[in-house]
Image 1: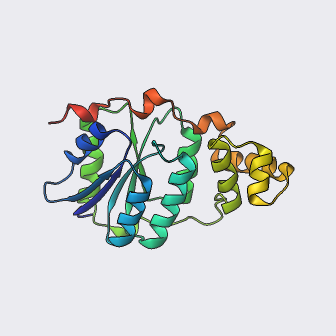
Image 2: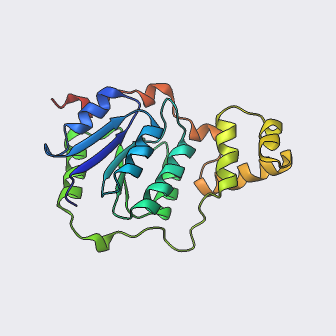
Length: 209
């Protein structure tokens, strides 16, 4: 993949700057903490992008990112995505993402600068589009209703409020929540929350000038 365009969505400005430093000098980069700006940019620039995403930010949740990933691949199958994630804490989410698309890679927040550089360089020299495919068969992806329920809970609405907004029963809210968590491979909503100290943690990326 010849990386000439990249999009970075991450809440930490210093981490975004560090990641930009790892990309080719001639690469055009959109760096933002706003998921809407990221989405609008990708819609307006429908060309192959390396997209680096933090799973959670100031104005968006994990569920918002899952929805964005789905939109990204429907718009352009040549996009490649790297997720900034704590590998050990989010193994269930990683399994889900790998099942829904084989073109997603992961940057472990515990990795060294040299390893992250190696990951990005591998994408730069990989020119074989046949290695990548969108949406494997028979994968149980989150439905729109399941995403709506999880988003409502993450926004701290109770079951009754969510039921009213979606015009369904409170019992169905609980049902959709259980099914969605099972698909994501997590046991509770707490697993979908990234602690603030991890969200803005200064990573080894920042040591690059």
